Length: 256
Image 1 (cartoon, helix red, strand yellow):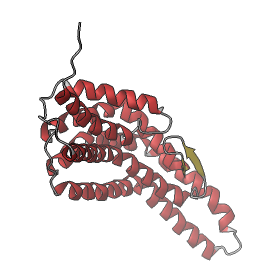
Image 2 (cartoon, rainbow, N blue to C red):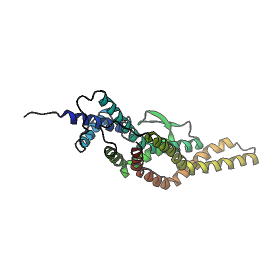
Image 3 (cartoon, rainbow, N blue to C red):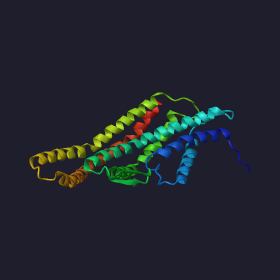
Image 4 (cartoon, rainbow, N blue to C red):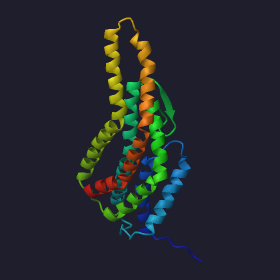
């Protein structure tokens, strides 16, 4: 029995692997340092094999040369854009936790994030962990994979074209990320601002009171209580954000 290698399909696999590997490298949860590199490589290769078997041939010839390099770069850019879109909701929640933690006095308190390998604010890590659990429970990783599959229908491989609207769509989504972060942090931030105003009034009325000594534990207590009260709302917002991941990926794909 002899085995034959179809070089055209092999080039198709290389193109698919470039898009899949860059997506896996930046997508939420699975892009962290806690996931071994071997797992990422095997997952990317397995996904690329499955996708290559379901899509038509791109028709890349053996004498593609520099064109093949450019096509691989195009696929990597598409995968990077899709993975970035999927991870924006995590950055928005971390930003919200950083804003609320700054008001509570947790700005100097940080923990090591095993996913990124850097120090992050304590409250940001707490909310990011909750979002990770909800992301997996709701099936957000399946939404990302569905977006990856749909990308080969919207932007098939073997064509060296990219629209100029992709970067603009990404910029709009980045702006949306900051808006979402402000909305998530708004309840705790506004409540703590009112507490600060009350402490300022008390400091003027009772100069003998050391407001700093009283205010520091009071801000932490009020902030934690407000976060506890707003947890059901946070769960609803997180579910809504995860549900919009696929739509945002389609928006970027349509612009590209």
